[in-house]
Length: 276
Ligand code: AMP
Ligand code: MN
Ligand code: MN
Ligand code: MN
Figure: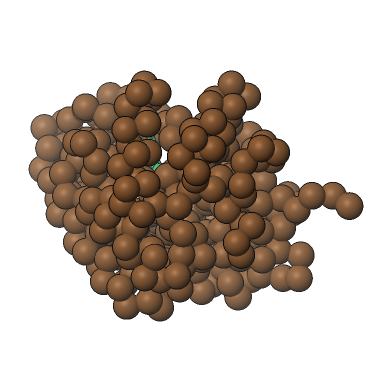
């Protein structure tokens, strides 16, 4: 029998993905995914529609990707198997959305320096009902002809340390972990390799995460080398964390980031789904 394909990190139009929740479910199903978690940025607004689109071949898990601030950096914590109606979770979501909105206003103020009129309302329109974020400002910069594509927008204006990178204002690790736990979910450090930390720094983060009650770490996220997977599996084992896997899918087009495209977890880690 073929192993079930798990993809426990994906985005929809509820945040900065380009497929609606039901389109995502169909897209993942076509690619053989058996268990899919929808993990939009600081919102569970896509969960109900995704759950409605589930089938006997594809189970949907409600998740969320919380933004947190740790040691002056922006770190993402995925919550898996959360109850989208949990009051504690929704209170946290509201707090984060207020932080997102005030951060977006500040990003807007800063980007006026690039000669764009009123960037905040324009980005707000780009986002529609979705959780507003830097990708909406990136789209605006592309539309305004300031840069030729999203990657350039991040490289020049929105990425770490650039004009539009406003990191203040997210909740801390303890808060987001407590919201996830109150909603019955498990807390997972998202895409550890993306922070470009030294191993020493990453272990400090993981130690604080464990201390704050965190449960798991993404040992496989998107396209990464076997060497990175090996080292993250070692971290998971050393800190007795469960292991998760996900594509961090946002947009169709790049086949290597499609749902279900990042393979399997190594055999010597404890998968997050063992307790489900
Ligand atoms: P925010 O949630 O507002 O902090 O925006 C972060 C999101 O921007 C990430 O989840 C990615 O979807 C996107 N992003 C970050 N870096 C890049 C990049 N270099 N190129 C394209 N998208 C990016
Ligand atoms: Mn994103
Ligand atoms: Mn992320
Ligand atoms: Mn993500």
